[in-house]
Length: 374
Ligand code: UVW
Image (cartoon, rainbow, N blue to C red; front, side, top):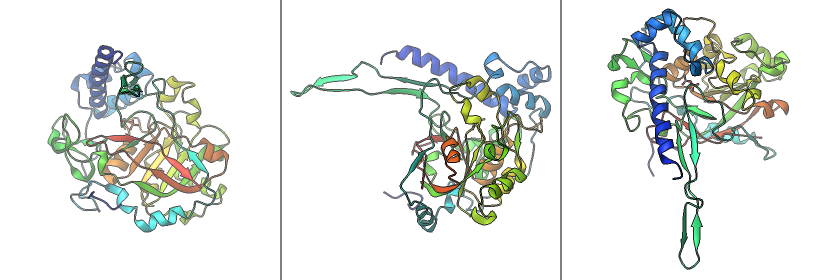
């Protein structure tokens, strides 16, 4: 097929839960983007957080909005993309056949490191996001035919590209330049909300555009460097990243155009153990380290956290600025809620990374089963 690259048990409960989730997520989004005047006023009065928000990271972001007032942080256009004015693929353009061959050369033993958590309703989730799985029937269908075949199906209601181990696509994050004017809300390559948003899926920048990701991955074991798990709100600096490479005896120029990089912060140890703390905030890179990694032409940045970036941002005026810098401005993907601890425990610093985003047309991101192969 030609592509744009080479290579029933409780339906009423599900429906109402989903409606509630969608309503609150859209409210959260508007608060995050700083476009609700009411939200701004209450933020200024220090009244932004619901109890759910207080334990979900949104409260921290809400307080950032209290200081920005939703004004455009940067009116500088970042488009057209260096990959072309119509490009929807972003940095995965850099994954060439030669890159794939190079990455596969790192596979010497056939050992596979799973980098995904299982998807389950108990997993920590940002804001009011949901993950609901039901097997209607029990079994769902049958018996059929003389052989009495029976079968089970699952019904899943979730923000499929945005919960659990997931990769953000380029239609996930943008910037509102002029309040609620959708023709002035810009995403990767300058596409506007007016152009891309559709009730039944994004009309552009859907995750189906992303190339299969088979490339070299590098781990920065920041927890190993510091000899402890990082703390909520602890920023990973460029110096930290450089010191990781030195400690891991990885040459400074080992990170090449088209590679992926990952952060082991230790925050993942909270997964399904202390979910309230996990989603309250996190350690991660700030804008300086993000720009340093962008300068290396990476395709994707992943971490054992839910946003890969420091939350709250040390600049209290900013909300998820690294997301904007990577996804919207540079077309670089973000891979969240990864398992990186086993790689770190085994001193696996460079590996062949494989992540095949699902071709869910119009989705903002993708679940998947990323692996590191050595
Ligand atoms: C947001 O959507 C704000 O964050 P994430 O991409 O980390 O889920």
